[in-house]
Length: 192
Image (tube, rainbow, N blue to C red; front, side):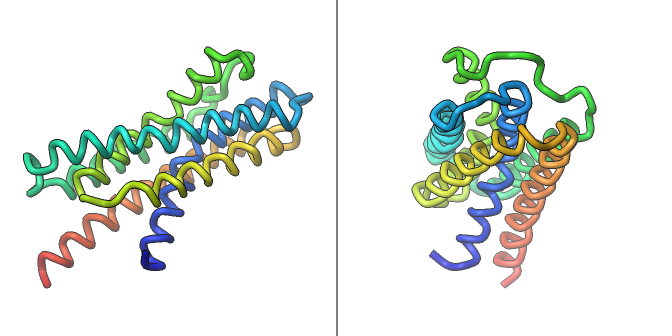
């Protein structure tokens, strides 16, 4: 594992974790009496789905990569740019905060975990297209998401909801930048 790949996977994990961070901030804002055990449960659920969905996407990508190998880098870029753009738009909208809910109810927690992990499924799909081994990125994505969720709930008690919007914008920018890096690497390698 090169340093450049580690940094790329770390930035990807950070970019993907911003949805979970925003949800966690909202949990902290609405449940200021949240206990460490409850926060750990929420963070573990978010991290589990955020790490699991790329594996599912990767398996699908591996299965169909031969059909689209000539345009896989453009698909990966398009998917990352689409996700990043969506995150930026959600971050700009002022009404993007979560309504009153109970994050400790299992159905709500699983719903939030799935909703914040759809982007990770798409990223895993692009990993499958590009034949990137999945284990290390998944470990980083899950770890970063767990830490981001724990920090989000802690910060949610102390910061305004506006900061969670700013984190979505930053996450979107990071994902678009990674998509541009994939395109640049492919074009550079083809030219060499």
